[in-house]
Figure 1 (cartoon, rainbow, N blue to C red):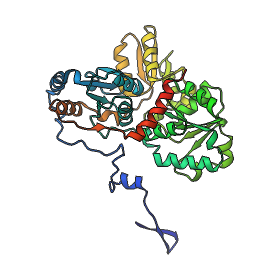
Figure 2: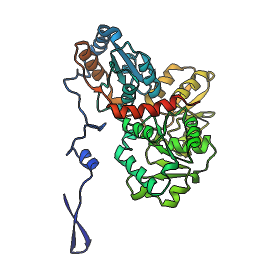
Figure 3: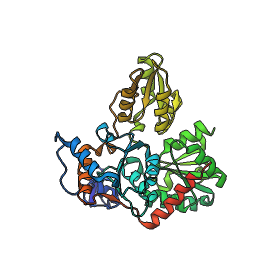
Figure 4: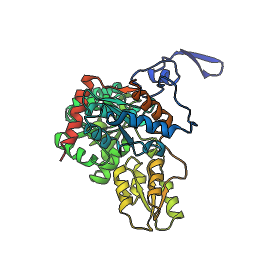
Length: 398
C-alpha cells in the first residue's frame, strides 16, 4: 500500500507503509484462524423470530440427555441462561465442566477464552462447543502471543526478566496462559488476584500483569498497599512499551495496556451522579473498573461477590451496580425488595457475550442431537500443557 502525505504546500512525500496483520484483519482483507473475531458459524441458524425456539431448545437438550452439559456465564441473556445446567463466572464454569466427566459435549455459553479454559481442564474425550465462534473478548484480544513475547524481550534487554513473574487474568487467551505457565507465572481471577500477587512476589521482585491494567492496579494499590507510582503501563503499540529502562526496572507492577470494554465505561461522574440522584445508595463495582471508580465506590468485588452481596443485603437497601447490564437486571428482578440500578445511564451490554443468543444455542443443540459436532474449541497439546501448568499453580494457591 502506498500513501501520499503532504509535508508542506505543493510538496508531496511518498511513504511505503505496510499495514499490520491486525489492520488487514479489521479491514477484512486477511483471515486469522486463531482470531476471536469475524468467524461465522456453518449452516443455517433458525430465525430469531421463530416462536418455537424455546421448545426446540428444550427438545434437543432432552434428546441429548446426560451427553450434554450447558454452562451459562452470568453475563448471558436470560433467554440463554434458562437452559444452563450451571451458571457462574468463567473459572467456576470451567471447573464445573471438569467435574462433569460423563458429559460428551460441553456447550459453553460464554466467550472464546472461557471455552478454551474448559477444553484445557476437561478430559480428552470431551468436546467443548461455543455456540457462536465470533463470541470473543476485546480484553483478551488486547494481548497477543506475539506482543507478549516481544514484551518479554524488552524485559530481558532491560535485565529484569529473571526477576519478573507473569500473572495473567483468567480473561486471557490460551496462548497467554501458556506463556504465563512457561515463564513461571500463575493465573488469577478477580476474586483471588491478591493471593496470586502475594505468591508472585514470593517468587520474584516484579510482576508483569496481563491483560487487564485495572484489575492489576486496583489489586496492587487498594488491596496490597502499593502506590500508583509503583505501577507502570506497558503499551504494546509503542517501542519498549512506551517506557524507559529506568521505569521498567523501578516498577513493582508492570501493567499491560488492556481493559474490559464494559467495565471501562464506568466513570467517576457515574458514581457522583447516582449518589446525587438516589439518597443512601451504596455503590458496588467490579475491580475491572477504573481506579478512580473503585476508589469512589462503597464496595468492590468479583461477579460472585456482587451476587452474594445483594443476596445478603437488607430489604429496602439501595444499590448502584457497576458491572454488565444483563447481570444487573437479573439481580434487580431477583431482589424486588431492594432498589437495584445500573451505575451508568448508558446501556452497556457485553456485545461479544451477547452474540450467544437463542438461535445459536438452538442450532448448536439440534446439530449435536443429530450427531453433527459443530464449533468445537480445541487447544493444541503444547499450549494446553503450559496453560494447564499456570492454572494448576492458581489452584494450589493458599
